[in-house]
Image (cartoon, rainbow, N blue to C red; front, top):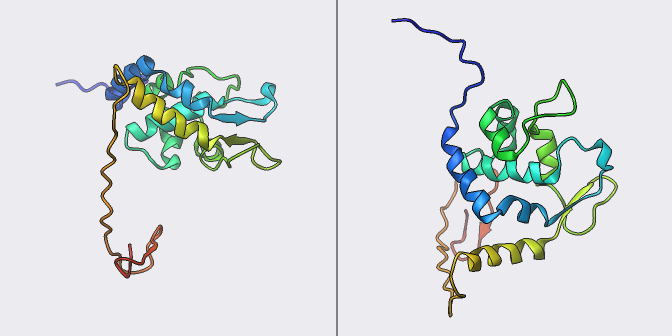
Length: 173
């Protein structure tokens, strides 16, 4: 048996190429990115909004909901391919963004960009996009849409992050 560890840039995320093909069919990332506004000076932007949105979408598809995971993912070639960014202008920078840059998109306020938040989003446009994506998936618009929401909450014990008081259950959930 011979073991060789000089394979170069390899990935454990090759399964993400299928969602990438799906994205190209429905054009989700660019349509979603159009719901954001970036007020940074274009010449100073290393990671465009479409790249950041793509990283976020595909990160979630790979079960990486936390932007901190992207500090490692940004060195993986498959997420870079999916984000559409294989090269960078700066030599010391990985092509996809790290957590601090993605955090700016994640905390983008509604409305116009401001002094401290240079990226903002249009909440109504995002809501419309999801409806449009749903309608695009059907030959004709359905006569009726039924949203079956499960309102069952799980009671929590202790002071867990994200907990909230639910009056119906008279407990923190």
